Image (cartoon, rainbow, N blue to C red; front, side, top):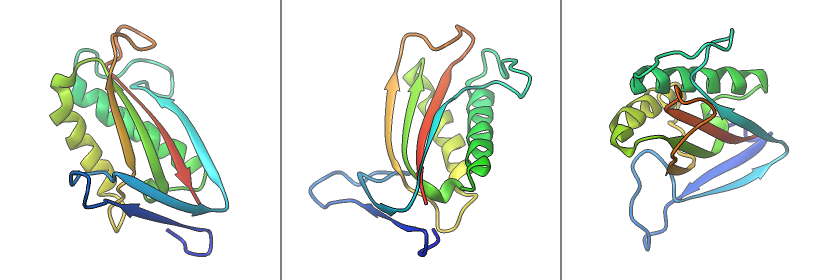
Length: 137
């Protein structure tokens, strides 16, 4: 992250379990915060992508998140918090794979704080994942 714009410091206190792919705590000193609405698996025409295929939907969600970040002048490296909603925790491996590919787009790899929640339903019954985010500059 650009030090002139702000500083993002991931922290993992030794009293807490060591996380994989995220941070327990993220300290932020920023000039600007960007709040991104929940991104779902739809294309630019609003059509659901990957019906009944979680991996395809997760890939589309992170593609949409990248576009939202870019519109605000951010990258995955600016993310400080993700809230992830999935319809079935049985898809956690596919989610982690998509998340890892997304965060591999920045160096050093980003490690925002993450909350992952299973929900009974999203906006449409065809949707399997939604991700909302906060970025800092």
